[in-house]
Image 1 (cartoon, one colour):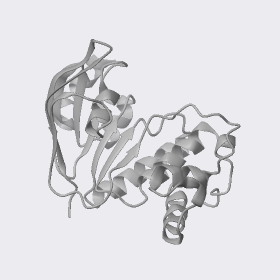
Image 2 (tube, helix red, strand yellow):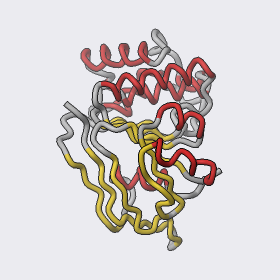
Image 3 (cartoon, rainbow, N blue to C red):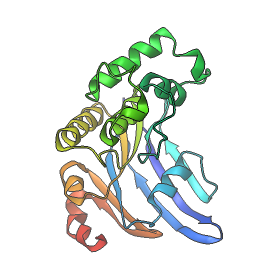
Image 4 (cartoon, one colour):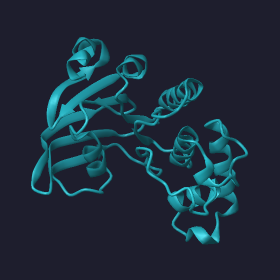
Length: 226
């Protein structure tokens, strides 16, 4: 089984009357590890939020293939009030299930969360106050939530920002494992060296598509977007 293909067809988007995306069209192949690159403010996160149904847009975004489990999504590391009395388990319950977070997780969810935290290198931290974690640890929690349950489409918005080198390698290994299982991965990434290590295909956007294609065909153009 493979994850779905994702097709962006003339996607345009405005914020406060200012154009953010202008007729963006490209295709992420089924089961691909696809990196989305481009300058800050170029519309990458807005495009992903449109894909997730969080931002109104014109044009079409569609899946080709069947999605049988929830989409996994790791957002940019959010600002978080360190005084909010929520544990790691509370945050995962809040993000990952429909029942109210104050009721806690059911047994199967707790087991899945524990396994996901182990896979992201922070086993045993479920009872730790989320606000006490480092930025890198919080990012690992968000990644653990995104892979529990295991998705067939995983969307990553700079998941290794603020993580130390061992953490970066762990995330890359986990993503490679999911990709090997056929998961479609769309990864917003500013680290061009990492893009060269991990990407199967790449799209660069700055309001419009700058270039798109397999990594071996577009690698020489990556320096143009610094």
